[in-house]
Image (cartoon, rainbow, N blue to C red; front, side):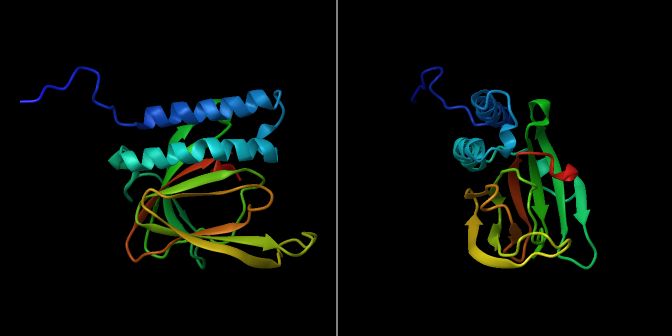
Amino acid sequence: MTQVAEGTKSKAYSLADFTRDVEAVIQKAAEDSGGGPFQRSTDAQKHIVAGTEPLLARFLSEGTIPAEYCGPQDGVEVEDPGSHYSYRVNMLYRGKDDRFCIISTMWPPDASTGVHDHNGTFVVEGVYQGKMRTTKYERLDDGQRDGFAELKDVWTGTAEVGETTHVLWPEEDIHEYTNAISSPSVTIHIYGADPSKE
């Protein structure tokens, strides 16, 4: 029989560990900005994405997301008749002073966000179950016409379990996120704002 020395077993990277570490990255960005509106600073967003994307990848790889946040029975349903919108979101964590939030999303087959932006904030997202497709767009018009945008598809990629992607304002802000398989997918997102208030 082999004995394991006490304290040598590694502890799983839990939701509490993940949120603590994301909070630290956000706090550093806030401190580096001198108290200004860091969420809309391109440099701060790049720092936040660079710091949080590996944390999200680690959290996804541990498989420690509570089961109640991965199914269709809980959360807030987002549905827009006549569009591809139809998915369920669960708030996992709201950051200090509402500087960010972490949500899980359950995507039925072929569900999509539709083309959208996040009003000048970053998003880091990763796949916990299933497979997702991200398409990023470049805006070609001047933005002066209400309800109109001339867009060009500049990048499409898929992410499988454990893989992450991000959007950065202003260059990569317009995008679409779609379940790429014929069974449900579950994703985790770190938003620079509460998406329900956008």
